[in-house]
Structure formats: C-alpha cells, structure tokens
Amino acid sequence: MKMPPKISATMTSTFASLKYKNFRYFWFGQCISLTGTWMQRTAQVWLVYSLTKSPLLVGILGVCQFLPMLFFSLFAGVFVDRFPKKKILLLTQTIFMLQAFVLTALTYFQVIQYWHVFILTAVFGLTQTVDMPARQSFFIEMVGRKDVMNAISLNSTIVNLAKIVGPAVSGILIVKYGSVFCFFINGLSYIAVIWGLLLIRIAPFTVRREHRNVLQEIKEGIRYIKKSDILMTNVIAMAIVCTFAMNNDVLIPVFAKTALGKGASGYTTLLSAAGIGSLCAALILATTSKNGVRTNRLYFTAFTISALQIITSFVKEYWICLILVAGIGFMNLTFINTANSIFQLNSTDEYRGRVMSVYAFLNQGSTPLGNFYAGTVMEHFGGSSGFLTCGLTTLLFIIPLILKKKKTLVDPKSGMSL
Image (cartoon, rainbow, N blue to C red):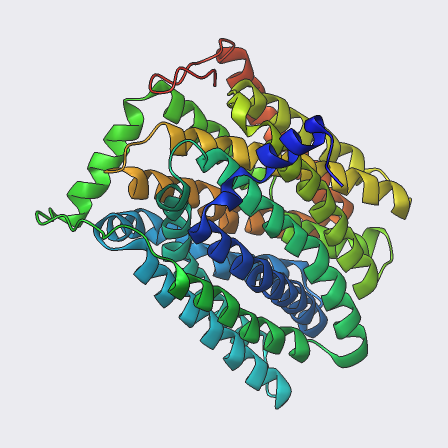
C-alpha cells in the first residue's frame, strides 16, 4: 500500500541521512551501544548514592566523568584534526568496553567501593574527551554538509531513545538483580558499534604534514571562533546553559528520593520522561532540519529550561513532575542540537575538530562545575533546592544575553538564517 505523498515526503525528510550506507552502519551500532551506556550511567549513579547516601558524592561522580573534558578537550581537538576519525573512534569504543567489563567484575565479586566507581568514571570521561569531538566531526564525512543537520538530529533520536529505554531497563534490573547486569550488558553493547565502524568505508584521510605546536594550534582554533560573531554567541549561550541548567544526572536522583519519596523505579522513570521529551524534540528537529537553524531558538529554549526548572522545584505531585521533566528534556535537546548545528555549519574542515572540541568542552566539560554546584546546594538546602537554584542562576545569566543579542544572524556560507 502506497503512503500518501505528504507522509512520504515527511518520512524522506526525517530520515534523509539514512540513505548513506556509512551512516546507517554507524547509526544502528549506536542504537545498541547507547542503550547500554545509559543503563550503566543510571546504575552507577544509583550505586554511588546507595553506598554513600550523599548528594555531594553523587555530584562528585559527575565531576569525575566530566572533569577530563574540562581540562583536555581543547587538546583533543588538535588530536582529532590530525588523525583519521574512524581509527580514533575504534580506539575510544574499545576502551569504553574494557571500562564497563572492569566495573562489572568489581561489582560481581562484591568488592566495589565508591572510589572504584569514581576512578573508572574518570577513565570513561578521559576517553570521552577524545571520542566526542571525533564523533561529531565524523558526521560530515559520512553524509556531507547538506545532510549534516539531519544526521545530528537523527543521532540525537537514538541518544534520547537510549535515555528512555536504558533507565527503564536499568530500573528493572537494579530492583531484581542489582547493578552488575547493567554494567555487563553495557560492555557487550560496544561490540555493535565497533562492528559498525569496521564496515564503514570513507575517502582516505589526508594527513597534515606540518604539525605545529599543540598549544599554537589550540590558540589558532580559539582565534578562529573569536573572529565569528555567530560562533562566539553560541559559545556564551552554551557556557551558561550547559554549566547551570543541564545537571539532570545529579538533580533527578536526589529530587526523586528526598522531595518525591521515590526509589530506584521512580528515579529511572523520571529519567525516561526526560528522554521521551528529548526524543520528541530530536524527531521534530530531524523533520525540520531542511529549514535551517536560528540563533533565536537558543535564547527561547534557555529561558524555557530555566522556567521549567523553577516550577519543578515547587511541585510535589509525581505525575506533574514527569510532565515538567519531559519538557525540560525537550528544551535541553533543542538547545544542544541548535548549538551543534551552528558550530558544524560555520566551521571549515581544517578547524572542525577544534571547533567541535570547544562544543564538547562547553557541553560536557562544564558539567563538573555544574554537578558540584548542584550537589553542594542540595547537600545543604535539600533536594528541591537543586532545580530552583539551577533555574534561577541560568535565568540570571541568560537574560542579559537575550537583551544584548536581539537581531537574527545569517550563516555567511549557506545564506541560511541562524
């Protein structure tokens, strides 16, 4: 039965990047691997909170994962610009797999301590520091400039589908069998993405023969961004929102336990609600990617995230919190994908690795500061204070940026409104 023309056109637009064989290999491998990753992330947060009963130590877990991004992401950008992205990703995914199996063994033999989790999470974070800019830069090699925005959004659909499925499955396994099964399944899941990468065939990588001093190349990348008003606006907005608003990994488990009186199941359901919101946003952005991207969307989503967090802090009804957290997830994903697309479309091949390392630095490198901030606030003032303080702080910094940047900017290369 033939689909109506409008539905067919919408499907073609939404899944445009899947016409590329290389992207299909990558995308389907990620579907499996990211689900395992979110199972592990959910389980290890709950494990640390169960071992320590400390919101501050849960916050420090986030610091361990994202602190390497804060210190080393700019160096990683130089590394990514120098070497083939595919080989870099094969190395990072293999390290991720080994990390998961070590965590599995320690938990299975019941010798796990919270500091073990911190060390292994730091290993994960150090590897992710290289993996993230390499993965983001690899999209354009697989699909080209025309469909890169669609590829970013489709990748976000599986990231956020994993945020729904991963925590939900993890919650069941934690209750019935403990965290160890989550860690083991995550280790196995990396086989899929490694296999997908091995199947990818792309044009040979052109090695830059003249490698300058690493610090000099970092400075060149920063100067490149500073010359562009579009990129600098993006940097400032991301610095604010990613540091203060995007701390769900710390906010949700403590809020679920202390403010709502929920256990592992309630916590993981809240995470899944955030994932559902993000998934809806990713699908909408994939469908509308052909229309370009506007910087005004950054301001609108940042303001809305702040408002939703402030409202959530005062709500005690669980089902209302699920709706609000889903809204936060929707706006978080819209903000991040908009920022990602602006970086991708306004950087050249020569600088893309370094530009995307700044994206990684802002997206996840700022997380240690935000996690520590949120964890400290909740340690002293209770679980509800986290959403309230993070929302108010984001609002305080984003309003001056909104007032300063009112005009719509245009991408000089593509002519699209930003």
